[in-house]
Structures are given as structure tokens and as C-alpha cells.
Amino acid sequence: MNARPFAVAALVLSAVALPASARLSTGNLGVDVQSAVGSAGNVKVKLDNGVARLWGNVDNGETRASVREAALANANVDQVVDLLTY
Image (cartoon, rainbow, N blue to C red; front, side, top):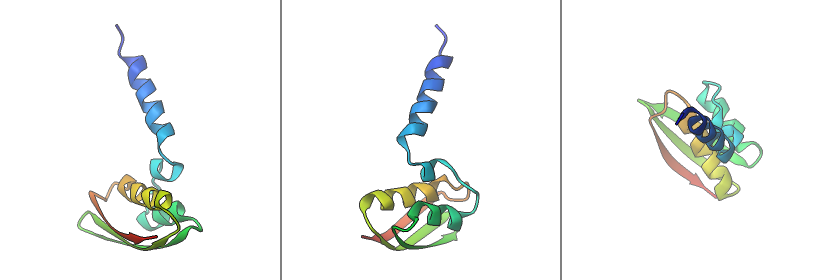
């Protein structure tokens, strides 16, 4: 049995399950975070030794999750400290 179709299906499903902002990274953490926020809040981010610290306000929990996922998608981020409020 060939496992390749299952791997492709898993990849496609994982891409569909995440918001667009969480799937793609421009390589610029600030741009990625602002893209995830859109007009649904005001978020600041600071990166220090692989730790992205997020603070500010977002409109809802969905935006909060998108911002967190966008930060984690950045290659320089190993951990996120989420200080966001909504």
C-alpha cells in the first residue's frame, strides 16, 4: 500500500484547517502579526531569543488565536508569550 496519498491528504487537510494568516509567513514577524489582526485590534510584538511577546487588544478569541498562530509560523519564533486581551 502506498502511503503517499495519505500524506498528501493530511497536508491538504492541515492547510484547510488553519486560517490563511497562520499558514503563511512573510518572514517579517510584525507584518505577519498585523496581517492576522487586520482591523480587529491593535497588537504589538517583540522578539527576543526566539520568544515572541504579544500584547495589546483584539476583538475576539478567534483573532487572538490567529495572531498567535501567525507568530508561531515565523521561522525565528520558538515560543509565544500571549498577553493579548479582548
